[in-house]
Amino acid sequence: MNAMLPLTPTRSDKAANLLSTAKALAPILARSRPLDRKLLSSTMTMCFGLTDAEGGWIWKDAYDASEAALVMQVRRLGQQFARLEDAPADIMTLAAAQTALCLTQTRRSDEQVQLDQFSTPLELASAC
Image 1: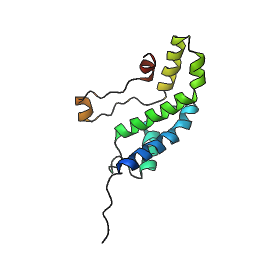
Image 2 (image 1 turned 45 degrees about the vertical axis):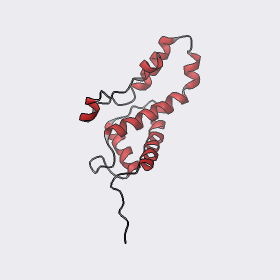
Image 3 (image 1 turned 90 degrees about the horizontal axis):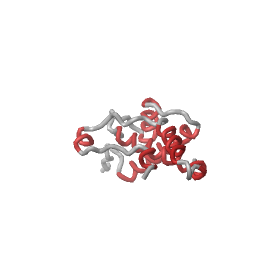
Image 4 (image 1 turned 180 degrees about the horizontal axis):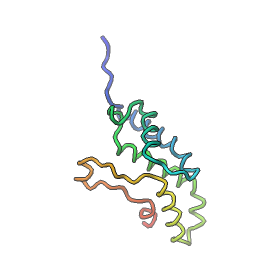
């Protein structure tokens, strides 16, 4: 008897696919190139093996992957951020420049809107 394969990635596969997507996007951010919907969608499709229309992933997943890539970029720039320790305005400027390379999270499910699930922008998070 043939085992039925899941239609969507399992939880562990999803995490691995999101990490693969983030790792694929990080070098683009490292070159200060902005991410766009087409690039994010094609990278997610490549890593998940299905499109969003086929149910392989949702846009919230794509935004999570781009945020993970942004975190990788900020870690890469850690020494640059550390040198600016006494210049909070410069830290905010650098953080805003990095955030500007990512997409705004404009595609939201009804559930996300109901639960007020919005991401904290990097420059605001760095102020905390």
